[in-house]
Image (cartoon, rainbow, N blue to C red; front, top):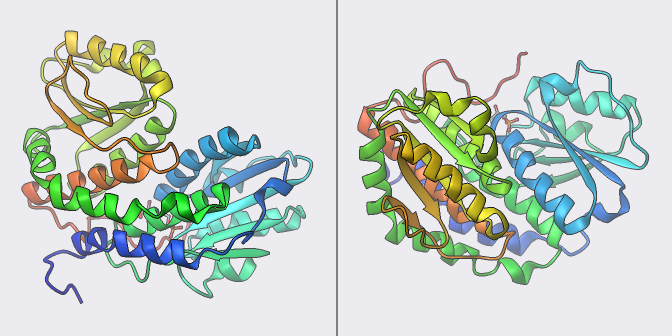
Length: 335
Ligand code: F6R
């Protein structure tokens, strides 16, 4: 039931603050101790894979554990070098994705301990896993994942930080975006919805976030959209920049902020229309959405919410079938 909403996707995005509250509430200290391991492999598909890409930065930075992220359809067919004392984490909303299921079976054959982050109780991946953390997103109907992505990210963040108190302000933070940033987001959507191509730039965690933002726009708006590590553009991609090419830059990481800003200037001087999403004002750029500055492990949540809402607004302006995009299924149970 969509309730008062015209689209499941929007309804599910609006559920995020409540889901975050529930996830924090349900988290028990020492749920699972990641620090026992010397190496982590994260294996998943699509948006769940993008959660892995982001979480890698956290595990390496905060726990000092080397982390490798693999697309499940790649992991299952390549030679695996088993690291000493390693853990394989499988992330899946449905718990039924064929390649992710195959990957967990392979990890088990290789006697690597497994942890599954799944949303659907008693799903195939949940049944295979040595350890399970259930995300508390509830049933997700929209093909494009939003609330389940947030629940996966938060479950991993809690596991890494092991401190609920740090996350208590997060539901309010997301509600604040929903209540106050819709106009800015719609204004961005108007600039973007007629584009043929949209590029994203970011570094570090911002790059991982950008990849999810690009996928969201691609799948529901059918606009070609790619994310690039900002430092890579001069190795090829900058050749694509023309007058008015839209480039969305994500700038939240303080350590590499100036580096990304210099890449934004490079594309801007070649005519790009740069749209910045940032947690600190960037004086040289006028076209921007500024969000609150938050601790490192909390910051991605408000950026992702903006990108989910942006994808939604673009698809709406284009008149696309938002909840059921063409060619896509909610659960990919075949290879
Ligand atoms: C994108 C999306 C897909 C899924 C992917 C994995 O919005 O929903 O990319 O993330 O198919 O699905 P799960 O998480 O069910 O394994």
